[in-house]
Image (cartoon, rainbow, N blue to C red; front, side, top):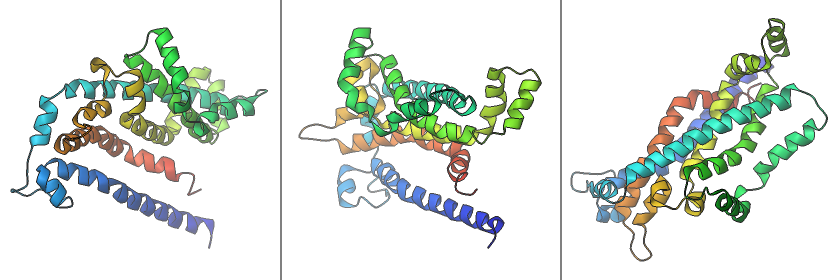
Length: 279
């Protein structure tokens, strides 16, 4: 069978696998959302059943909106996530372009150095990070979280984007240089539009760990004015009693931005993931 025939088949199989994985991954989300609209007894008696007129209850959402400043927590998470993703995409793409476009002594070693962050979790340096933030006066600020999340997302962004940028035609870039375009113009006007699927892939995979993270908000920004959604929802979890209605309602509201982003970038995300599998 020729390569021309196998590529569509391989592409279809990859798409089916992604759809199946998405359905499996969304099932816990579905359970969380339907149980957030049920009474406490219904949650434990029939967790797999959709809400009925007898079990429907909005007490969880009433508790979330009435207790604590959930709107502020949501705003903090949104600011931290959006700014961090923008910084990761900008600086990661620029570093990836430099590594893939320019050949210099130590290019390979620099690429390996920047990729170390994929293998070494940033949480291992929590103590040093906390000491640095205290010395800089950034504790209980959103800036501390943005800096940490940007550093956390850059290694993967550089690794993915550099591979995609190597596939951009050299003839196209050289034609731009002949026409008098600067390196910045070539980067922003010629290269970035061609790696848009990879940018969407990086954005999605960067957002999810940031939005769902509890560790660094608890360590670096535990103040009431800087709490994120994930940290704010912990007020409903006690040592002896847990308000499951409020917890599920808070988690359901926190899921919405991730779902919206996935819907917006789903086509670009699938193209970015499958582009290497169907060549």
